[in-house]
Length: 143
Image (cartoon, rainbow, N blue to C red; front, top):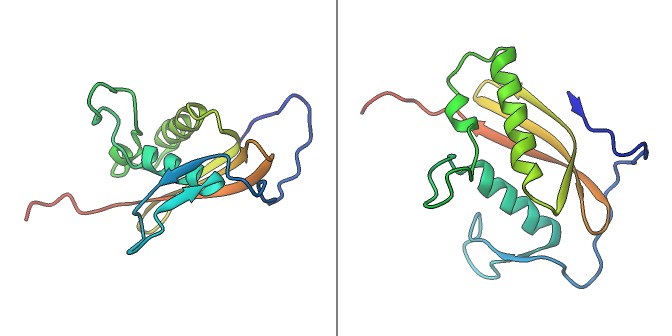
């Protein structure tokens, strides 16, 4: 597990709500069949991070460094090198978003793929939550 020391300040991991007026607004159709498609605040930040993690690095036009390499590592042996590559990628992706700060992260191999647990500090509001990201191995066999 990687921990990031935050200037000697001891932070309690609690779940608090944002102010009543949304700070961040976004749009998603993920797991929604009908309106409203609007997401706000923490949900907006989470969805943006999930979109980045599920985008293959190099697949966006004119943005070769956008995205994640984790999907490319799913079929590699889950050893210390692969684990560190994944944790480095988690840090790199989260570090690009100024709305969150990575407190700690861990990666585990599951029966179906890889699960990432990242404790994030959201701003404003100083709300800390754990974000779980699952990457599922799919067969690479030709049909």
